[in-house]
Length: 313
Image (tube, rainbow, N blue to C red; front, top):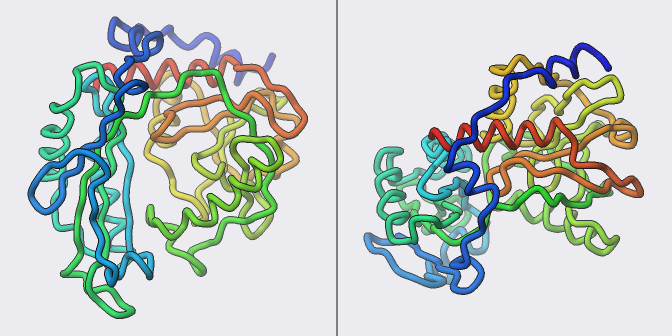
């Protein structure tokens, strides 16, 4: 076994503590039996699927909307401020103006989280969207809604994946530097294609034929030479906040993650494939095309490190 993999295996064990151990083992019944949706819009909180749009709002028919996703797990909100800053940045990219600052949105998040059970596992989704403007949305008329809802953190059971026939656009063709709603139509096309083939999540390539990411999350693999590799950001996918955090956590534990171009053929020989993203944080791929993959030590360590980080956030 190579030095690269040995360096990973001898990294100091992480003390998960009571919080992280409970999160890894426990799923609160509130999410399954009585899911709750809470939205802050126009200065007030409301429950359920809160109406936001008018029929002539720019976002409805011209897709001028951006969002972000953060997490609260038993009151812990890892990297929340980075997610809130990103929705502001995404707004600028689409010619919108987020009406709230990071501090103001963080305060609203705290208010909303407090309305859920203390053990709740939540998805936090700030949304900025265009209202007025025939073709070009008027930035000063941008509207804002914050939705918080029950969403249990997936475990390590894993998912299946295949290679999509669809490609990711670059910045010449789409606002790929933003978490823009308009980008997700192509992702859902790819996911529908994968589902029809019996898979859960597709791997998407860029226009050059290199691996970009999964349809819904960033991609990591472990090569036959025991290198941990992830596609280098090239303008076709967001350099995810959870992706960056996992790379940093590995580095802090003496493990190098290589960022480079990845050919799709490399996935056919990878020892491990896993993803990072806000919804599941770290989730292993257990079947790629016709290959069965184990939940390996690298993905397991990535999850362990992230859970420990979240416990202290």
